[in-house]
Amino acid sequence: MANGKQTEIPGLENSIPDTPKLLKNLNSRQLEISFELIFYALKVFSEIALAGNKGLNITQIKSKFGNQNQKNIRDAISKLEQLGYIEEKDISKSTEKRYLITSSTLKKLKECCIPY
Image 1 (cartoon, rainbow, N blue to C red):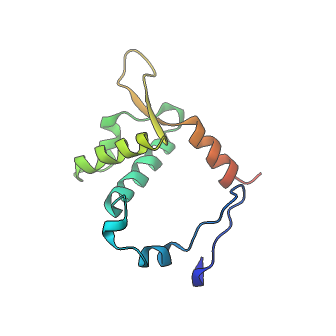
Image 2: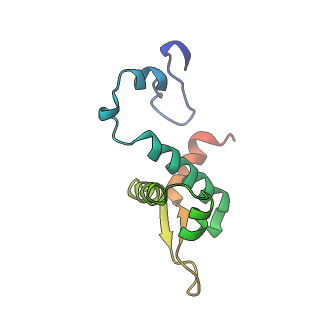
């Protein structure tokens, strides 16, 4: 991605533009999602992914962040749900609903990122 070049990702038809150059051309008002939300969304997504098919309930997700901003965690979960990356499921009647990575997200990750 250096020098304004684009990176090709196997399985994707388009390439991803050089992120630093793209961000340099945007001011903060033009960005739809704050960098803080991106940080929390990535952390939430990775924790849910590490939990595998067991998923995590909201209490478990919040515990991964310690004393950090609870509103940002809820906003990140909400945005990931809106984008279709995670979903809340009732796995068993006796426990809280849990957040899991959607099957379509797993399929996309396997297609583009997991070597055969």
